[in-house]
Image (cartoon, rainbow, N blue to C red; front, side):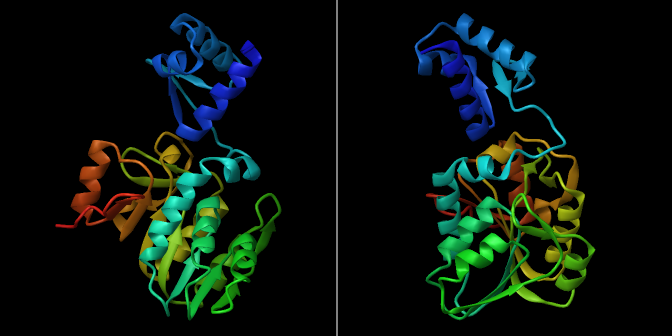
Length: 260
């Protein structure tokens, strides 16, 4: 394998997992740790990764990665999260699904639900749920964000205020160590906050890559959420905080953490 191919694959692994380790990469590519350290240094010089002790992480940024790249990242993990979340969404309820590739996975997992009403500001969610004849779909208006077919802005926020729904299922771009849910677009953050205000119960769906990403705008705290669905164990402190907040944590493929 050439260095160029190795650098490409390292970036793919970093985007999938949020961080990479020198020892793990050396074993994966069957090269020396010194070779991997040089690779990570080159990627850091290019602004692709940020060096940390023992490896590298995705760099802090104020811009999200492209929509198609996000859609392709960790598809199996997102599908597992969606299936776990859908099992806890009752038949005959109303719910809101916001912008995000993981909420789109939840929409696909709801194709066999009956007598549900789904509100969304995500045209992709609406198009997915067209295939469920037992689902009533309401698309709230707003400014169309062409890059991901999301609707954002003041019109969207005001439209959401006209509804009261049983459940909000939202995603975020990053999750801070203290449990803060973060995003890149301040307009999208305002919409997510409006969704949470109008929901009787709220779930967050986010894969493990969000644990190591950083974004500048705060949506709110996991303390506000009734449930959090992910695909890997949380950092110990955050897991303990969720237990204290009575935020039920479900790791896809495992039993939910009991409240108490």
